[in-house]
Length: 72
Image 1: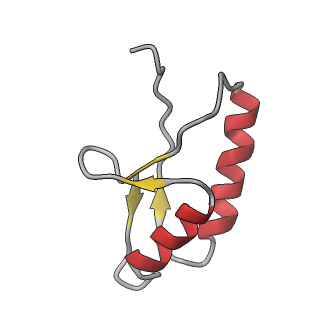
Image 2 (image 1 turned 90 degrees about the horizontal axis):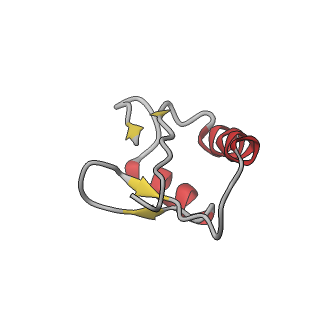
């Protein structure tokens, strides 16, 4: 989930950066989805969150990472 800022980066630019990381833009309750190849450990999720933060740095956006169990 991404919260845009009118003084920050353009939504199209933010989407391009996230897509370069493997995110897919979607419609609905969430803005983007990232599908892991297999089961993932919490440490890997945190490192990925660090990469997201570095990728979006300077664009004036807030983001939220939320994991969902694929078996649900």
